[in-house]
Image (cartoon, rainbow over all chains, first blue to last red; front, side, top):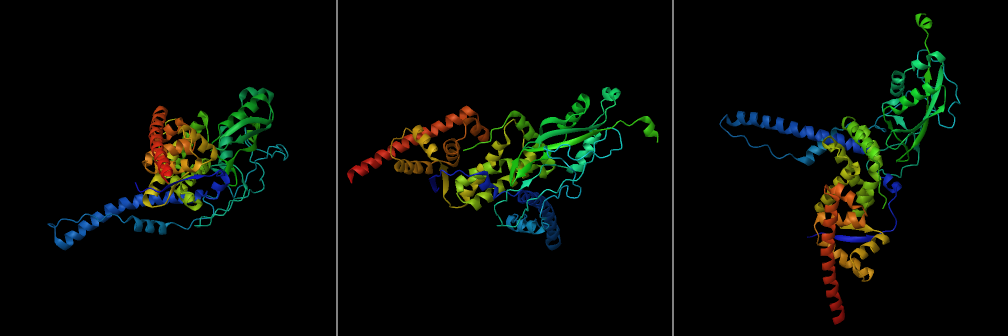
Length: 256
Length: 198
């Protein structure tokens, strides 16, 4: 065996930060897309190519001539074609929630900003904008691996905050047992988004009524996955508080 | 070496994430960020070149994402599957070029290895014979020894990665070790003789 092999004693372990310099999910997505296209091209190439050759053979030599088998696909050239077809890559793969920032209050100040005036029944409020989060500039140019700055990127729902609030609005039911008490207002639910994007440690930060509290935490537990927060390139657990608003819409106000 | 140990509930969350990523590749980012450092470290230990390790690691994840539709969840951590792809990628890399393949370990790992091999010779001689012995093994055998003694992975996990049972992983490893021990003894004996003559 012509293997060259060596043993190295190295007492400095590779840290997550060392690895982070080579983390670039945009590149992976791009590579994946290219691989998909390559697959499609291959099939199209074989199908189209064979047909074309057959037609050409027919024209040139008439029906009796046997068709030369398709030459093996030149992977390298095909790759070049595929890559050149790639659209210019945007600086961020999917600009999420840039336009409609919706507030998620840091845990420390759950009720700092007053509730807004909601209008409908069992309404989940659409809160006030939060200062914009800092995005890590991601560059996909080759060889531009600079150590990632240790910037905190906040957790966000995969389909954006509007979709999350839509989900919460639809999912939240005013518990009919609480109607006699006619409680209305906001339950602030605190939770963590773990590094896999799941809500954990869901608890009521600001209580309203046991039944409403229960409903609010249930909805949060069942909400769709989030994109986890990260410090630099490393996923981290993040703490968030979301307000869930309960309103009783009386039949008289409904008629008006 | 640190190893991400995960609970059953995390394994099922992973399974859900994988399902989601099958239709929306963006979702793969969670798994990517979770396992990138571990795969990078593993590959770096073989190639000992940061850029090269970075490239190969990207390749591993591109392959994983592209093959994700074929992935079947069998209750194993997703990392086992990623490692299998990484091992193939590394083996292929060394087959395609004439670079030196490295096996990286810490002092503690070396002591443990020396113990397992019943080796009492001095460190330099031991390393030299170990290197020569490993050079004669097949890719699969080197991978097994590497995972167990250099990467310090438990047999259970090695089994998961290689698609064999824990017991089988153990048996195979010790069979190779036994052969290595014999070879090393022979070689040392030979060297001592030479040393004696001069």
